[in-house]
Amino acid sequence: MSCRYKEKRWDLKQLVGSGGMPSSHSSTVTALAVAVGLQEGFGGSQFAIALVLALVVMYDATGVRLHAGRQAEVLNQIVCELPAEHPLAESRPLRELLGHTPPQVVAGAILGLVIATIIRFICVSGTYA
Image (cartoon, rainbow, N blue to C red; front, side):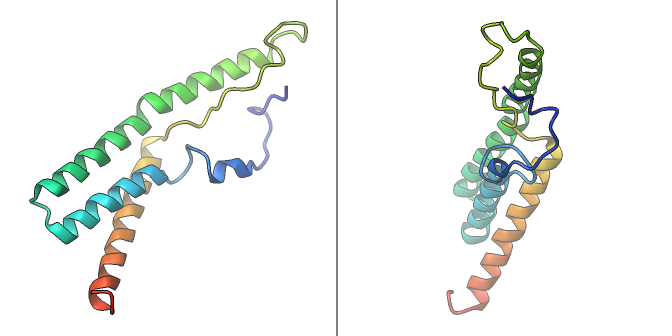
């Protein structure tokens, strides 16, 4: 088993995996909420439902999932330091990037807001109205 936490190299799996900057989950649910608000109005129940969904997803990303990833990092370090003859020494490493830091979630939310606004502007001013 290689000790990946010590290696400084590019990992292309991070492009499609969880974790990282910006949070794609946050941008998706924020874009959904903003699009619903722009289309149906920000005072309606549909927007309220989309907003609550967005808040739950973003809270989960910075809460349980982030801390589980940090625990996985510590466990991987412990396993990496085990003697070679230990039964767990050759076990697969746990995934460490599970959640997001608050700045990653905020960046994702801003990206979602911008994308939803641009798409709405294009649809209203273009031929897709």
